[in-house]
Image (cartoon, rainbow, N blue to C red; front, side, top):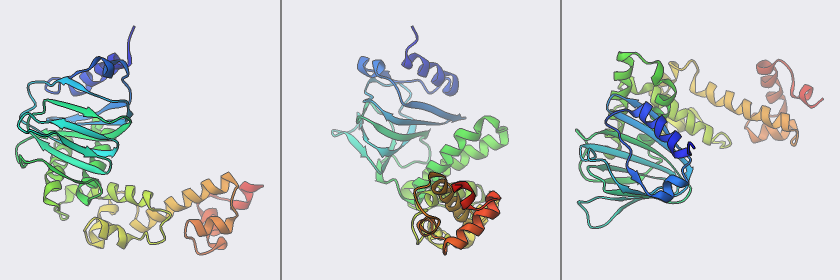
Length: 290
């Protein structure tokens, strides 16, 4: 009988191949396996993700862990890593990242952990572990670019794969520095994607503007606008369209008046929302209500 862990191991081996072997897990971990996805491997860079998984605990690690750097971005829960060079374990919790270089003898997750994991060649990374907030611009850009790779890497040619890999490594190296080269054109797609994700989180915030997003990522408004130019929309246009989509959801739900929906998503008034809604969807909100 094929178990959830057997299916996961097959997917992992197919996607990651030689050089990224799985560690040995405890029997309890194997029996309760779920919530882990291999996302992408591009050359010597690997990306995987966990989503509300049960406790995951290892009992042994592959021998080839010493020449790797690993970035752990934790959205919920946490991880404890045992480094044979250190007397105390390293922990990374909700809303934090940990950039760790070198061997790991064992790791254990907290129950229900959701996290993103990236592995790189250790060359160019500081050997000292670095831990901090996962909300920094640098970590947001790494996460956005890694998630984009999951969706696009299968269709990339050799040149595109190399560019995507080099961009991810450059963004990861910027994490401990606390800054990235905002003039580097290869970083524009990651900047636009990260800004879109942050805008989606803050659509209900009246203070959400293109200038606010630029400040959050420590770039100029012009740099952010250039990054969005390649995605086919402006920064302001993206915010407007996403708010209109949320407003449409409220219209369909039918629990709020048009005036209340307009106020919730920061349209000037009900008439302003109705005009924008009709331009986008071809009918007024009242037609949905009827």
